[in-house]
Image (cartoon, rainbow, N blue to C red; front, side):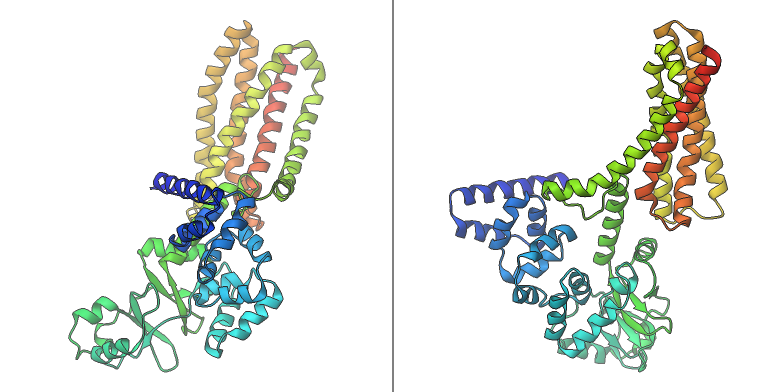
Length: 451
C-alpha cells in the first residue's frame, strides 16, 4: 500500500512538473484540485521548497484550510507566512473544532483574534473550551460537535430528531445520553436505533458501560484505550462527568502516527515536524545542536584514548581493534534501548517489572557477550597470531556488552523519572557510555596484560 502511494505521488509530481514546464498553468491547476486535500498535502510535503509555492498558489481557496491542517507544522508555518489575514480567516471556515484548535495555535496573535471574532458565540465557546486544555491531552484532542439525547424519550422521537438535522457530525457512530445538567449517562449506537422497536425508550436499549475519557488524560493514554477496547469513538468528560465532547478514531490514528515518528526521529535528535525538503540553512541549524552534543561525547571518548598513548605506540594491533569493542557495545545497547523505549511508550514498563527487565537484559548481554567474544577472539588470534590479544579483546567485549545491556534499560527509565524524553536524549547518553567503557576496558586490559 505504501509503495502504491509513493508511486502515485511520484506520478502526480511528474505530471504536474510536465504541465508547469509547458506553461499550461490552467491544466496544472485542474489536475491539482482533482486530488483530495490529503493527497495535495502529501504532494506538497514531497516537493522541494522552491516548487511548493508554485503548487500552493494553484490550490483552490476552499481547499486551503483542509490542506493546511494535514501538513506538518514546519511546512504549515512556511505557507502561512505568505498568506494574507483574510486568506487565513477564510481558510478556517468550516473546520472541525478540534482541527481549528490545532490550526489556530500556529497562527500569529492578530490572526487568532480575527478568527475568534469571525465565529458565532456557540462556536467561539466550543473553541475556547478545547483551547483551555493542553494540546497533548484528551481535551485538546476532542471535538465538541456532539449529538445528545435524553434517556426518557423513545427511539421514534430520536429518529424524528435526527431527520430534522441537516447532517450528522463526521464519524458519528453513537449518540450520547445525558441528563438535563449535561451529565453523561451512556451511549446510544445508531445501529441500536435502527434495529429496535421505535416505541422503546432510550434507557431501555442504551449502553451504560461505555468507556469514558477524562479531559485531562494524556493523548497517548487515549490511544491505548482506543486500541485496547477497539473503539471507534468515545465521550470526553470533566471531573464531574459532564459531557464535553468526543474523540474519534481518526484523531487517535494521528496521535499514534505522531508518537511513532517522534520515537524514530527523536533517536537522531530530530522532531516529528522536521521538513525533509526544507531549505538547507534552517535544517543545518537544527541538526547542528545534536552534532555539537555528539562532539562533546566524541571528545570524551578521545580523552580516554589519550590516556593510553603509550600502549597504542607500543602495540599497533590495539589501535586496529579498539573500534570493534566500542561498536559492538553501541549496537547491543541500541537494541535494548529501542525495545525499552517502545515498552515505555506502550505502558508495558512499570515499577513492578523493572527489576526483572534489568536482570533479563543483563543475561542477554552476557550471553551475547560471551558468544561474540569467542568469535572476535578467534578472528583476532588468527589475524595477529597472538593469543593474548584474543583474551584481552574477549574480556573487553563481555564487559562492554554487559554495561550496554544495563545502560539500555536504565537510561530510559531514569530519563523518564527526570521528565526528559528518552527517545531524544537516550541514544546520546548510551553512545557516550558504550564508547567510553568499551575503549577504557580494552585499552586498560591491554596495558595491564600486554605491556
